[in-house]
Length: 307
Image (tube, one colour):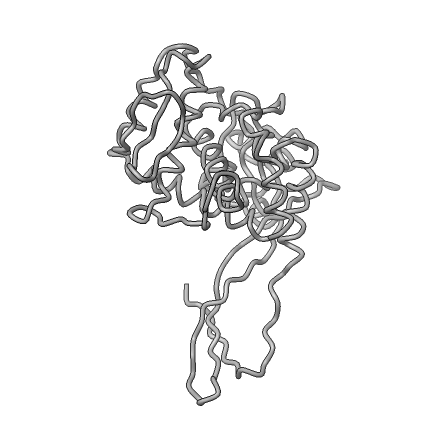
C-alpha cells in the first residue's frame, strides 16, 4: 500500500496521535493489575474458554496480533464469548449475516505510518515516518446471526499428558536451536547466550515446564543477533528489567495459545505487578509497544520451524 506523503513546513503543527486510544486500553489493563489480575491471562481463567484458548481470528482465519490479541482476549473472557472469530459489521453483512440488535462491538486498533516532509531552517526538505493509530469496531461471531456453522464451533481443548514430555513441543523448541541446558533455575543468560532450565521432573506438570521454557525462549530472542531488543536494563528490578519481563510474559502467552498449553501460573509474576504498574502509569503507550515486541518475538520463533 502506498503511504500518504504530507508536506509541512517546520512551523506547521502536526495533529497529535489519538492519545485516548492509548489511555483507554492502558487504563483497562492498569485497573486489572491494581486488582492483582493480569489481563492477558483472563482467557485461561474464564470458565467458558478454559482449555481451549487460541488467538482471536479474523473472518478469514488470519489471527489478530499484538495489542489487538490482548483487547479481544479480554473482551471474550468478560463477555463469555466462546467463538474465536471477530469481524466488522460490514464483513458480517457481506456474508449475508447480521449483528443482533443491541449488541455492542469491541474497539480495536489499526496501525500505520504516513510520511511527513518538513523544511528546515536551511530550506532543505527532510522526510520522517510518523506512526498513527485508528480505531475500528468488531463483533464476536457469538453476537452475529446467520454465519456458517464453522464460525460458531467451540475450539477443541488441547490434550497434553500431565507428566510426560510432549514430542511436538520438544520438536518445536529444539528447532529454535537455542542452547538449553539443565541447571538449578529457569533463566536466560545473555552473556553466554544460553537458557538454563530446572530438570523436567522437578515441575508439577509437563505444561508448567513448557510454559516456563516459552517465557525464557522469548527472552532469548532479544539479543542483537536476533531482534536487538533493549530497554536499557541496568540491574535486577529496574524499569528496563520490568519492561523486558512484560514482553516475555506476553510472548509466552501468545506462544501458549499457539501451541495449546497454559502459560505459567499467575503467582509466578506476582512480584512484577508493582513494577508493571509503575511502567504503564509512566508511559501510556508501552503496553502497545510491549505487545508489538512480544508479537515479533513469537513470529521470530515460529520462523525457525522447519516444515
